Image 1 (tube, rainbow, N blue to C red):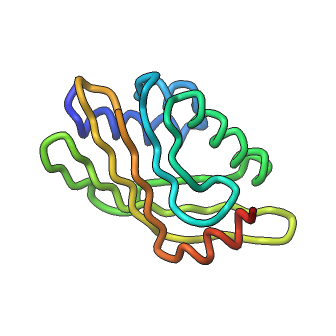
Image 2 (cartoon, rainbow, N blue to C red; image 1 turned 45 degrees about the horizontal axis):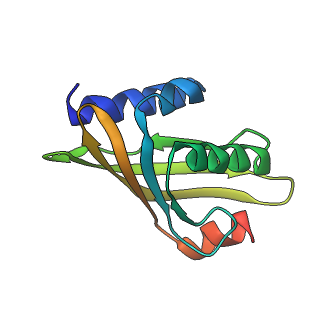
Length: 129
């Protein structure tokens, strides 16, 4: 599987609400760099930590968080940059925000993810400490 195909597969599964299938694009050692100053920020050092983060986000948003590509996926070797759009709500807050996800892919599997928010302060305010 080529780098871009692995990332497309990940986003296709997310769009269908198939988290387990989406995470099958990762290795057990995949790292995830979540920016900001909120309860989900920081380096996730393996798939188990990534799963815990996703479960926390889904709990925080009552399962309504959506992330979808919002433009062309750009490829440079084993790196794929994807403009994304995030939507989520809680009982008191709404997030509707752009960003960029950068994926490193090796041997058809995502091995590292870096996420970037168009407005990190909005992201931090939404997710809280």
